[in-house]
Length: 286
Image (cartoon, rainbow, N blue to C red):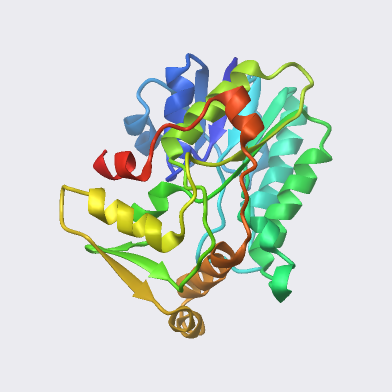
């Protein structure tokens, strides 16, 4: 199978693309900065393209069997901006139909289900839900993945120097999963997908813990340097959001993560795609 990837260099897109290559797929990466991406993926074809430009997507998808989308809303993105997870998906679908792509894979979210619960309303989650609706209505077979929290966020968005920041106190347990395990599951999903078949998989890690417990375990197992957990009251993030778009984004996403009543739903995923093996301790030691 020939697979095109859009969003191959992000925190989650990179390990997924690596797993596609390891699994033996013929991978073509569509990117704006071709030379930069070629240095990261010397074994993949890389061509110029932009999700805002349908003509470039048509060129990028020509000859491909499938396309995988690893998209995200920027922390400084405005509600009136171009959204990759709605308008962008619409552009991909148009190009996919033009080039007869047979499958579209998409990284979605499990916590977006919190939209409408407890009076919660965030336009970003509405965009994510709209992306799923658009893809399902396209008529093109799809593979949609709904992950729990990624372990990588602790060493990326939650990290500030030697501190791992945890916003608010929550007793909600999340099934943290590593992007590497997720990448293996995505590759397996494309391997077993039958022509015309639609796939939907909830992605969850080997065990459920609260955000604070996850941070504590990550810090305890991280041996390369001494880290600490920094607890930030939710109201501080909310007040900061009045002046800082990234803090406003951070408040909204942590409010959802801290309150969405996640339950285990990955039985079928594990049966079809394999059980995740990377624990928080193993992730911290890598």
